[in-house]
Length: 374
Image (cartoon, rainbow, N blue to C red; front, side, top):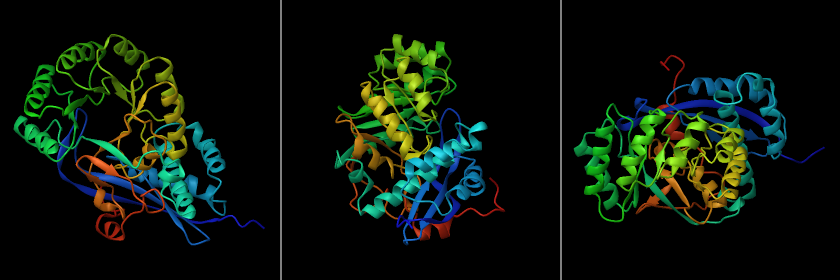
């Protein structure tokens, strides 16, 4: 009879957390951030938490876990993370969803299992993964939204610089490219010297527009151009990168190791923004990060997890430069141990686990009910 901890309970629920103010990018306008959660408990009394961050479809993620993945986990050894990952990945769901909902649901479960493993080891996940960095630089995305007026944009980004951030990100991809460029120029003029700007088009452009935009943005000294094209257009990104004077960043909407491999082999990306909530959890994130680093690329995650898990991943295995994560403060109050950022620098936690546990009060305040509209 094995002494390995057995999985006894798998529970899912969703939090719908109001944003501080409405935001818009090139695709969406939103007022709430949805956090679907899975909690996995074992017979030795521990609970691990995994979650995602989405604008919609949280019900689909939870239903996938409840109906298809949880039955596969009952009574299983919670430490056999790789074995469980393979079995869930190659389950019958593989026929219908090698990316998207089923893949993200697998990622939630996988993250919970890694959280359990770190808790059982008595270590923060970043130490268990190697403990390379104790502090991380952050760049701030939360002031650059398309629905903000120019005055708001300048006020917010200057406030970020005053608070210590050395890099900020602006959204582009609006109705008029000239207006996009003008907004970037005006913010750049207002920011103190030494504060860099990156831009994110959120897939809004075709190849012609992206090439034109890249030239104008390069003239403004922008640090990188993010998601300029459709996230499946490997050839388009490769073409743009070969002619582009800016580093090309992508990964928020790339869901698998195989998809990232295609971008890397095509020389179509400079900054790999692999997100643990989009790929199949910590297990696949680590494989993609190692692939990128082996090819000399930056790994700077998109923060669909609100930095909670990514702080551990980047601190554990991140390259020496840049050891950096995206700062997005939505929903931080939902976590039992929210990230600590001061002067734009994130200090790593000492508590065991992946910093993924949900605060009990947050569940009482924001748990979605079945009667609520999706």
